[in-house]
Image 1 (tube, chains in turn purple, orange):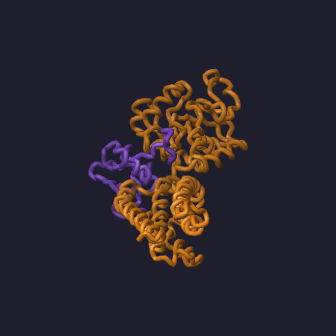
Image 2: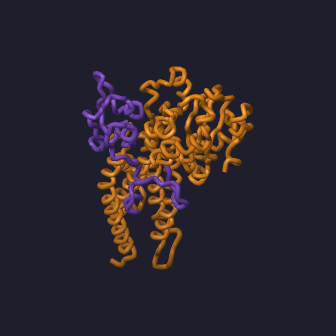
Image 3: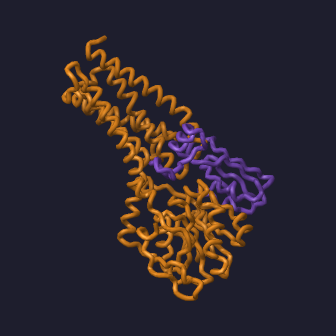
Length: 97
Length: 355
């Protein structure tokens, strides 16, 4: 399944990549693939901005503005002025991922 | 918290350094099955469905057995221990405040820091003779493998997304196929997530129903139930239909509904059902153009709003996309609602022969 085109904030800096393949290992949507022994982005529109690749890339070759792709979380973030979160910890919240 | 939610078989037997580790079954009890269903229905139940963090044993693990990290949301733990049936393994439960691995990883509670903390706390070093921790792949959102290695000496192996693939993964020598890396989102997955959308929507519906009945009930002679029901009934039916459209049909048939934005998908299904209902029942009051306009304006929009909420349950929507949707959808919702209310008031004043 694909979401809206050309919105994902994923950026891949091929020149910093050492082809360690951790990004391929952690991505749940197969965004990265190995082509001619080099990692490349296969389809940016598949990215859900979870941030696993960027967190685990030791070489800073990946940037993602990661966060929850959740409407109520984002609305909550807008209202409270904070970052979008599906914060389920508080006693008042009823929504949770 | 552990006592009520989990059945501990017994403490581990020898050698002595294992003796404090609680051993759990890989079978599910009736209560476990019941709990897995209640989690899908009740938010308050799910939020309390947690177990004590720490080390657990499945089977009769020893110093060479694999360690699997998990969350202290009991359903996550249950799914893992069930998948480990027949194996001897350790489960290291992190304190994720009762949230599942993926969501907790997104918040950072299932993260590098907590993993290091629990590994140190249970003295994983002294229990094991190897240096491997298998972390569910979705935990990679919060766990930085390199940092865990630097801080504990343990090498993080990101295991399969689904616990059911664990045995194949182990048999292949801790190697995943590309299929094992992918998160799926089947129709079944979507169906079991719909109660979470429908139940809060029903609560909102009760408020809506009360306001609608009150509004139509107000007559010069006081509040009349008969007129409340006569004029309010179509609105109530359409309201329930919006919930059906936005919180059930759209999520379940998600990939088959045209358009990528959820707001549009929901609006489309809402519009189709609204039109269907209007023609089917041919309500008397719909002969009034104002009411007809309100219905067409408001109810597909309600369905659209409810569908947009489902982005929180999906496995593929991203923040940038949802923000883009909201930027357009929220003003539209707001304006449509205001127009609907104004039209309603005009209708009412006209009915009361005030204008």
